[in-house]
Image (cartoon, rainbow, N blue to C red):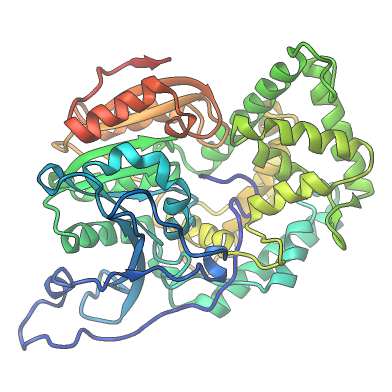
Length: 516
């Protein structure tokens, strides 16, 4: 789930659980990093998710005698360049394989993206969809470092985040531009003040090393992996660092590893515009009259008018907050992540045209990680921290002004937001690592790379780029002609058969396969 806009994700706050401790019981001369691989996680019944993970109830069991969700923690070095130094705890979750032990392959580790998404809360939410995969794998996920219960990044408090997300993200004059820059700087300063210790250590390369530690502790010779959205970037970086231990892996909703932040933001602008046009075309093609426009262009024009009106005069949303242009745009974008949400978008637009912003604000809250109780998860702080630690470029307002015409051409509705979102890391305390990730993995086992032609957040072109960057004989590309973010959860039979055939039986689909 790769998120657009400033801060390009969703949000939560929490206390940073940094547990500085040297491993006990190491004999003199032992390699502490090696000792970490000998950990025996204490699997127990899962507690209810905490605020940083988004709250809610403990996960319900899955069908079968071994369907109980179990949680544990894994110690990892705070700094992988100093493996004998302080450690942090990484939160894990699993459910055991439902099939015979003799047919079990190993642990299938999921990363659902963001960056910043809690795998500990997301895997149980989708657990039933992975019933076929569970016949031969333990299903495992985790909160990556900086996320949820794994030394979470925390920045502003809930009231400050409410104000932050209502900030005008598309300044029209120098005063609004100053307000946006000040708001961004305040957020970044709060992250440094509250989480300065973890910020230098949340790069994707750090998370990839955590993955390899996890693989070893779980007892697998190779990593069996299912990465979605940002999870594909994490998987690609893992393959680059550890090509010899790549097992069967699937990348779905693929991040383009060849693009720098500017190119990635421009690609998302095109992707969300394409998804909006697909939504509008679907709406106006219905037998009944589309309530939000008579044609694709009319839908575009009416939304643009709504956003201009909201920029001047916000309307009531979820009391006591008002729906601003920024929140409305975030809500529209959230609805484009899945075709299942298109009906909510229609209702939300129709309602907003009548002066009620409740539905669009609820969608925006979902995008930003805000619960009904007003508490935020730490998705946005973690998302910003990981993105800014990974990406070397730092953009100025002058850069944005120069690029605005290109972004507006890519998307009349989303272009300004995507362009101004590039200043997120301008005042970040930690320098970025690289222009773009290195995912070249010569000699690695095949990786199934799935691109969705209607994906707004990780545009389809990224799948071919990832397959090419992984290297000849590694990336096997599959195309899904569909809508929404990702392909597997569309329940398309062709996609499911390809994924199951590879992960369960080792059958790599022919490169260039198209579904449906």
